[in-house]
Length: 238
Image 1 (cartoon, rainbow, N blue to C red):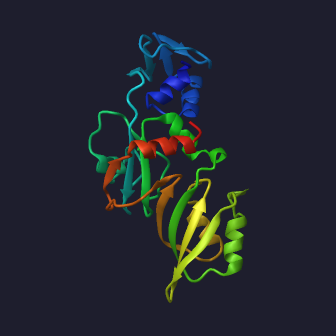
Image 2 (cartoon, rainbow, N blue to C red):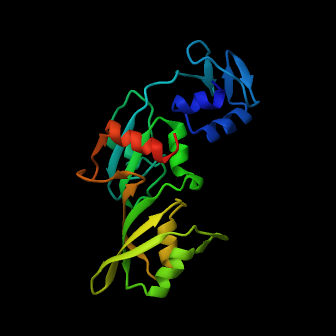
Image 3 (cartoon, rainbow, N blue to C red):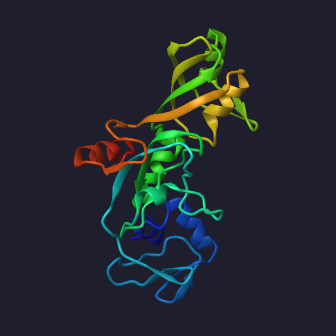
């Protein structure tokens, strides 16, 4: 097995991130620092270390879904001592990580796994994994606003990929939208809505690929069932 694949399967990080660790000289194989790609390792008999710490073999993969509440950070650790999604999980023997992020004020579906290869595929735009959000915005976006968002908004010099937007309902002051993205740039929906003059009031992710957020109270989580795992892997091309 290639070293970068071994690191991804062991839950250290994605395969792409593992390649960067190798290039930086932070990985050693049987006591020898490795900086080139393509090194083969035996998961059962090779000793692999990252930053001097031994990495276990291909541990059993874990797949969780959480209903992330607002006010909780999507990060493994926070230097300021703020509450993170890992605090909600408690203790797990496997080293699991959130798949992507939901910002502090966003809520809803968040996946966790130690399968680095799957996580990378779910997040990379080339695999076009749809992510569905229910979004409440200030005011009532016009047809022109919606068309502009669907065709792409320029953010930091780069246009967003086409997406779909559907009006779910309206109140006197706000509109409720369904937004489906095939990418997940930082604060993307908030920035797109700001660009057309309709700031986000509330944002919740409700679907990621074939996985739907149903029956989970905020802050609660569960393991994905075998059928969900099968569908998720299929959507990611695994």
